[in-house]
Structure formats: structure tokens, C-alpha cells
Image (cartoon, rainbow, N blue to C red):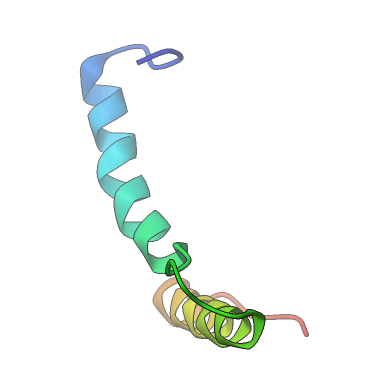
Length: 56
């Protein structure tokens, strides 16, 4: 709870953070090509969920 003002604030942040972090977490034994594909899928999913436009 280092910089959180209350336990409730920390819980609200962590409940959302865990869901987003799991989307972008890198699997253990992957090569660079697999990592790039997984990262691209994660960003695609993130764009669909948030409605954000990807600039590439």
C-alpha cells in the first residue's frame, strides 16, 4: 500500500491491474517470434476492449 491512500483504493487498482497485466504477461519459454505474435494479439485485444485506434 505504499502510495495508496486507503486499502480500498489499493484494492480497486489491483483488481483492474491484474486483469490487464495478465493480458500482456510473456509466457516463460518463447522465442522472439512467438513473443512478437503474442504481443500483437494482446494489443489487438486491448484495442478491441478499449476502442482505441492503433497507429502502426
